[in-house]
View 1: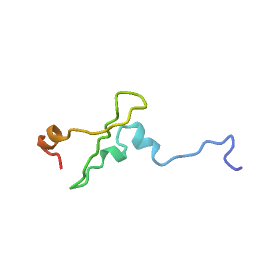
View 2: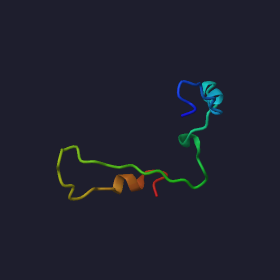
View 3: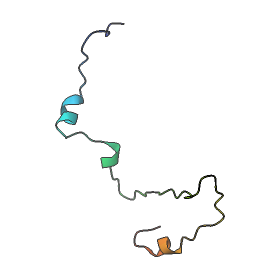
View 4: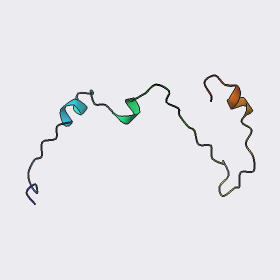
Length: 62
């Protein structure tokens, strides 16, 4: 245990503290798709069907 009680220099700290860090949420490659999970508003309910027509008519929905 060489690091117990010692400061450990982390290379990424400076840029993260300056607000210049790069996070997974910042990466937006071409052609990326996003998903949305829709859950039942009723606990333990069984979803029988979902009407997706309004979503399909929305711009950008695949």
